[in-house]
Amino acid sequence: MDTQNLIEVAKEARKLSYSPYSHFAVGAAVLCSDGSVYPGANIENASYPLSMCAERNAVYNAYMDEKTKDDITAICIIADSDRPCSPCGACRQVLSELIPEDALIIMANLKGDKIETTIKDLLPYAFQGDDL
Figure 1 (cartoon, rainbow, N blue to C red):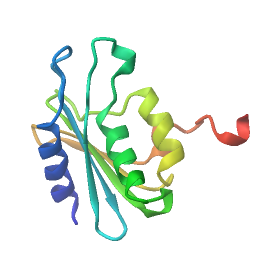
Figure 2 (cartoon, rainbow, N blue to C red):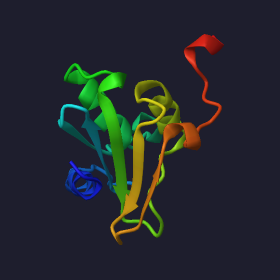
Figure 3 (cartoon, rainbow, N blue to C red):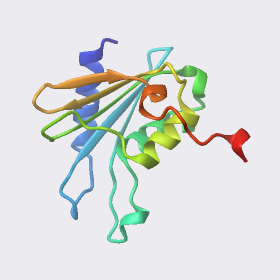
Figure 4 (cartoon, rainbow, N blue to C red):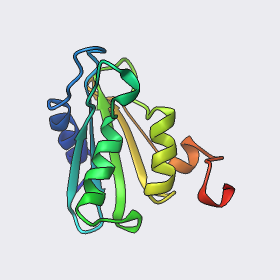
């Protein structure tokens, strides 16, 4: 699957967002090495800390289908924003542990802008299990 197709899957997932408070719908899609794709959308709650971001939902969706860190090759995040949608700090921390450090992260918006990076570049000093 090419980058544009992964963006389209994330864009479709965005339509499933439950975001009645922020009105900021986000979609995500995880690509695995076997070609399988796992969508995710943000799901809000009136108690904001109980909300879940799209990219975490997509990654957790893959893990629930018995995928592992080694299976994930890319993730895309998209929103209707002025610039490409970047993962929040909590998502960066989760991604640092659950996807390979060289997995492609595609940050996109509905205007067609995109930035490609890796979690190593987004969170170079991630808190890891061996820090405990």
